[in-house]
Image 1: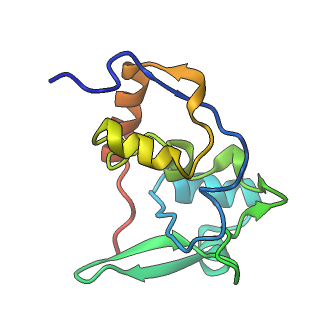
Image 2: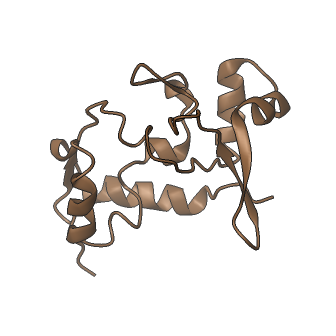
Image 3: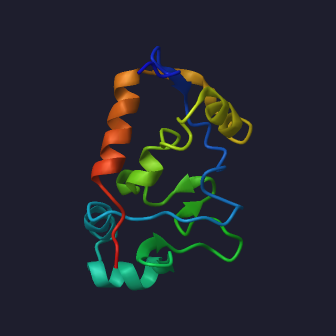
Length: 144
């Protein structure tokens, strides 16, 4: 099946913070995320969960997500920089190469209306994009 991104897609983060602030949302964590993040902050997994996470009821299951500040910014956003950048969650590292954004050229362009880095900068190959999709399928968010 031919994908609209067969020749790659351009994206470079402009550090605008669109994906990290203002709108409410979830940053769901995988087991790997919950290994790397507490290690970065030099605290136990339980301390990390208590201080930085919340449980999100999805109906028939619950997921672990990062907390948000009162203004809906990510708890780790500080002056348009990420305090957890070296160990940031897979969801953050893989943006904008998420399945729903890559469904079609239209969905990619729609995301580009909000994210100024989409369509500009570095060319990411179809292979790299497929690898992000694969990793996202393999490293599922933690279900409680």
